[in-house]
Amino acid sequence: MKNRTPFGVNLLAALVIIVWTFPAWSLDSSKIAPSAARQENIKPPPYNKLPDLKVDKVFMSKTAEPYTPAMEFKWGNVMVPVCEFSNTGGDLNGNWKIRFLLDGKVEGTISRGNIAAGSHQKADMGMLVTTGYSQGSHTLECILDPDGAITEATKNNNKMSTPFQIVK
Image 1 (cartoon, one colour):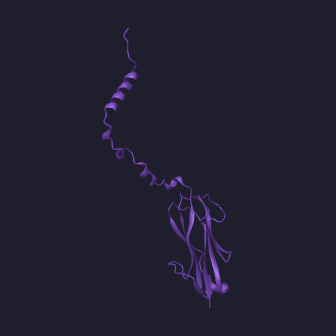
Image 2: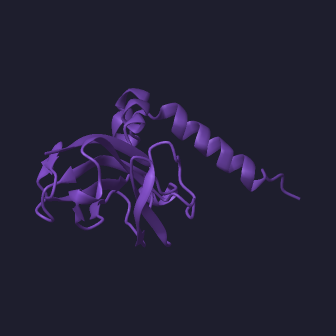
Image 3: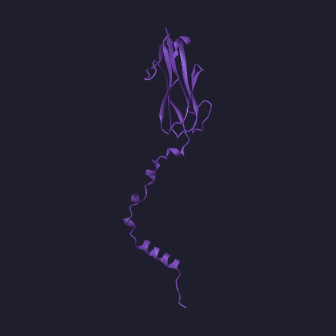
């Protein structure tokens, strides 16, 4: 009976010889795998994130699109509440609302649906006639998803307000 070395031992010996004799100085690690420093700047794809609605800007406009933002409106003219917003998280699939308030009172609510990750949109409530409001200082507020219909990364950026004036 011949004395034979098990196959696994021969394979292990061959690997040791290859690793031992392969010149380590010829390896350029930057070509094998990205460095840790470069991996820090890689953002995960948006589909791994929850949606995140964010109010970017809220203002009163003197006109419907194209909007003409203004801080002062003459009594008897029209004004258009506008809310610019974005989804800074992953895709949002489902129904939700935008609510406009003037001086803390609900003026209108708009229904919305799906919004892709990274998209930016504008919404307006339509024209309001200033004669329906007293002259002086007022506040316009926009609230995204006021009923909490969607699960988001954060709700802390879902509302914003701005002052405006109605003058004679």
